Image (cartoon, rainbow, N blue to C red; front, side, top):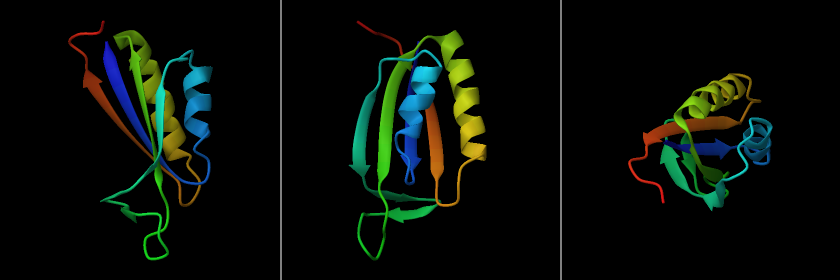
Length: 96
C-alpha cells in the first residue's frame, strides 16, 4: 500500500481529482490554500508572493500506485506555464 501526496500549484486544481478518478481512484483528501516555499519559489497567497497550492492525499495499492505515478508525471511534463505538480510516494505499513 502507498500513500501518494500530490501538490498542485496553478489555476486548475480540479485537474488532480479528475486524473485520480480517471485512474479509478475515488478516495482522496484535498487541502486547498496551502502556503509554503520550494524550488519554484514562495506561494503565500499575497501580492508579493502570489499563488497557493492544493494538496491531495490518497492511499492506493502498490500496483495501482505505479500507473497513477506515471500518469501524474506525464501530466506534470505537459503542465501549462505557471502550473506545477509535485509528487511524493510513501510506503504504508498499516491501514485499518
